[in-house]
Length: 131
Image (cartoon, rainbow, N blue to C red; front, side, top):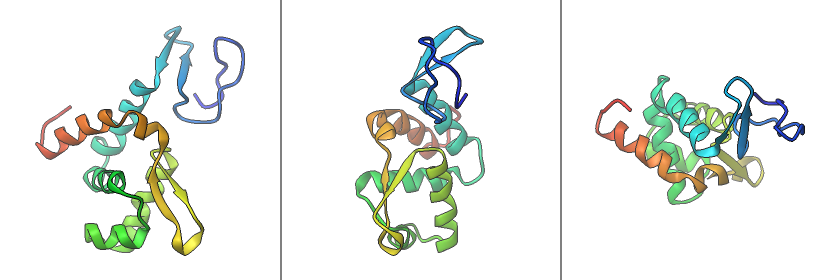
């Protein structure tokens, strides 16, 4: 999906979910919120550690934090927090700002714009329901 051609013939940016993604098989445009929903479902509900990642996203929505601050707030091992942060970074759900030891983690603009999609999934996780 990363380098597929769009309907206009231009290559999309190498991202899992650009603003609009053209799917050849379905011959239609899928909007960001649908792609975001799918990636969040996989990251939060389809894999082990989803509750921890949802907790991290929820904390970062309150304010940017370093890995150490998140570790203290959530009460997990530092390496575990870094593992989940790396996974969220790989999937473009969070971004970093700053350098090395003072690096802050923030919610990615794409997730921030459609945060209600996350909240619906978070509600299901908190209440122990299937999506």
